[in-house]
Image (cartoon, rainbow, N blue to C red; front, side, top):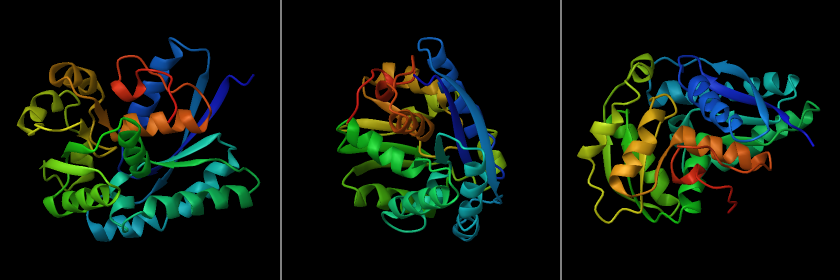
Length: 252
């Protein structure tokens, strides 16, 4: 049985978090499970989190998928939630299908996960119908995210925007900051909370403490992406102390 897996990531050029949090989650899993992972990335140019730069960056994702398929990765993650969501409702399905097709044409077929699709599917797996979200985005981009999520049948009862446009500044945020910032969210009547609807805003040390305090399932874009990657690899999607979604080896 295979025990070594290659994890491919398509990341914005200014993203410094996804290559930290995804490995951290899977290293934590290695402490309790036999599988081992290596990590491989290809980058798309993006510095400012604006709709124009996001669209230009997304056009680079085909090249990244082709490069990563040269390495014969076992699963590939598109690590920019807002880039996908800003391209129109349901775009994660189109993107994932297209990028997978590129890997297949290159002789290295790999399942493709997007952080946008993983967030939707992770929330659906938890049975969440009403949520609150925390984002680093400017308010218009946060509204695009809200619209995208609600189009998938999940109502966003509250959304808090930190309004940080520079992507490096987003990545420089304190990963423990959401523990206190999340107190400003109105979580009444919510089924779950998204502590970071952005794979660049660090939040991993905040997930379990916020969940413990709120008594609600708490996820982040990185947590959901890891969950979906493990599912695509047909591995139990469990990581200790990473919130409800990764708390048990269950499949939807």
